[in-house]
Length: 600
Image 1 (cartoon, rainbow, N blue to C red):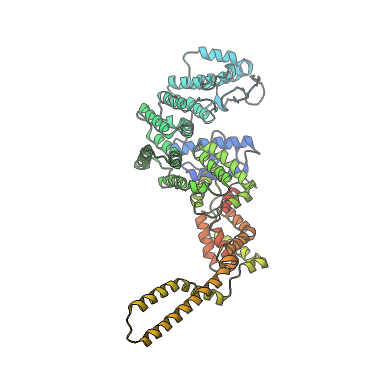
Image 2 (image 1 turned 120 degrees about the horizontal axis):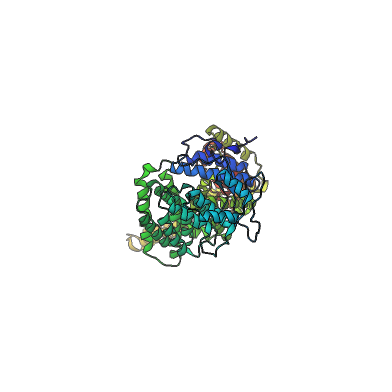
């Protein structure tokens, strides 16, 4: 029976909620988060899922940036949850007086908790939002919480703006950040708002780029890169890489001296997306026969950023640069083989996987996580098509490496701790026993039986003779023509030997042809027919055992294969040989197993 988490610890103490200790790393957080997410799935427990996710995001930022609770502001016991949810055509802009937190429904802003005085709690229960908004608007000077109240109330009392225009909610937050000396609460509210930004907020990528430059003028604190991270992902996703690079360079000039650690973490979080965008643009250009020298300049720019990360490695205690750079290399290798990967059978399904990879890498972790969960559910529904789609070709290796990294990187997909080595060996032996007990149909045995030993030996000996016949004939002709003989008897004896050898060579060549023709045509033991029969046998009888084994053992794929091969040395049986021959190259089995492992 899974342990029920202590919900009373949220939102104030996410560290104890996840049962973690101060100083824990991202791996421990992902493991604890993934465990709760599998217990409280979003489709069945939407409210619990929101709380868990909010706690995870809060704790993740504290781990990444090293702030922990130092910047957490103390809040009064009385909190009013002002929930402004987007509802088209809704006229229910009222305040209800009941025992639950007060909910104000408006058109734009995202849910958040706002700490206010007890007097304001009473006033919100009794007065109209329009009156409170007018009073706050006229108040001078304003405190940070005044700007936050104005921002949220503006969703109720002010009409939604036209597409591309900033909503009043956003305007009040930015105005407060400009004027307040301690705008931490406003910056956090703006960060939450950017994570759920309306799709029509910006007209085009140039509008977004200009907006980021304006934010660099306003958010001059060290939190600029953390707050604007979702906007940078959107800019990179929608605009060209040149636009992204130019905007980023200009923002750094405006900020002049941003917090070094914030900037480093920003580049770590954006590195894979930047690598993807450059490789994607280069691949598209090459596919049309174009080459632009700018690609080399962009690659050099990205390499400079990698060198910048390496030179400040001591400021990134919770990151492994080797792993981060390896991930970028996986993206580069994948794009190098992408043309061959897509131009095979099941092109539509392969493009679906490609688009999922693109969405995951070019989105913020929260959005990418939701997309991947839905996609993994579709994998489990269409597993037969996926198993049929992914044959064992060399062009799938780079895709498989990148796909495995993506699934393991997603917090919601994060599985339990790796299986213990001894248990892993025991599971491998159990798998081999199951394969050994599988009964192969009689017709399958007959189809895969090789030729008689004598005939196979003759084929090996005679086949080379077919290549020696022209060689023997040519040397013999030269010998007869140019070597002098003292008597005609010697010449006659040589001619007899020559024609005898030539006749034997011709007979051997004919025998080789007669023996080899039926082998190549219909009985080839090492050819396509035997390969097809054994592959069908593997797919029907052994593949389900292999998928179940991979799904239940949380090890890297290469380590799993190594242990199975080591244990298989003591099981020299045909079924196990067939399993090893095809399982090691079965991309579809691993994809389905990863989906089952992460979404049981």
